[in-house]
Structures are given as structure tokens and as C-alpha cells.
Length: 179
Image (cartoon, rainbow, N blue to C red):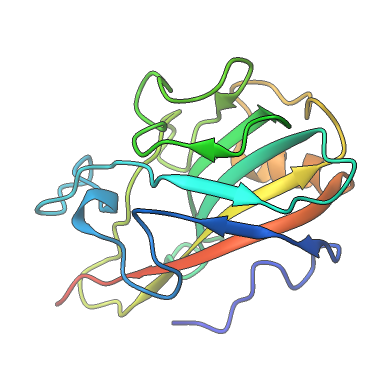
């Protein structure tokens, strides 16, 4: 793993809590969160179940992202980005990030990830590359809508969110593909 900290140059934000029945902070993703799309044996591309609480006062919406800073691209790899989750919502079911976004609340939408698919794409670390970290983040935002286009990239979402982040809840999972 690299020492790359994806939050190092972002504004400070309050910390709140995110939990999951499918992801344990600091532990390896299960096969369901690996990518079958990219041919990982047993991979199913199922987005993790997430529940959050304790968001800062003034939260008007949320965004959820899954990012691998250890991908050998020079820019990491965005696996999932969801914008405009209403402030009253504090949970996403497992599989919410399927092709249709069937488990997303009304008004929320998925942006194309780095595979250019508007859905969750599971972990796919290159064989023998070592362990990768996957930052599963719920961002508490001070606006109801980020105003980004549905075809925007997760990087554009992140840039647009930077001035509106009130809080950040983070789970870090890992994944490795043996050589």
C-alpha cells in the first residue's frame, strides 16, 4: 500500500459514523464487493450496505464515494459515486449501486465511475500488486443538491463538494489479488 492519503489536501471536516453489515473497517472486502465485471473469480460487484449517524447540524444532503488511491494509474480509481442523497436518508441497502440504482432514494443518482459505468464496480487490484485500500465515504453536505451533471466524473463531484463538506464518515476496506 502507498502512503497516499486521499484526504490530505481536502478541507477539514467533522467526523461522524458509518457502519456496514457487509464491510468491516480495516478488513478485506468480501467476494461480493470484488468485480465480476472485470473477471475477478467470485466477484459480484455488489455495493456495500451502509448506515450512518451523527452527521453535523446543517446537513442538507449526502454523497457516497468508493475510491482506491493505490490503483496503478497515477490518479487512483473511483469505484462508485452517488450524489444528492436526501438528508433524511441514513442508509443504503447492499446492492443499491446496481445498473439501475434500484436501492437509491428518490433524487439520488450514480455518476460514471472510472470504468465509465454509472454503478458500483467492485475491487480489482492487479494480480501481485499488493493490498489496496478502498475508502468508502459518506460525505455530509451543506447543500440539497451538488448541481453536477449525471455524466460528470467522481473527480468533478469531489471538486464541487469541497466547499460544501460539513462532515465525513469513512470505512476503509482492503483487497488483494495474489500473483
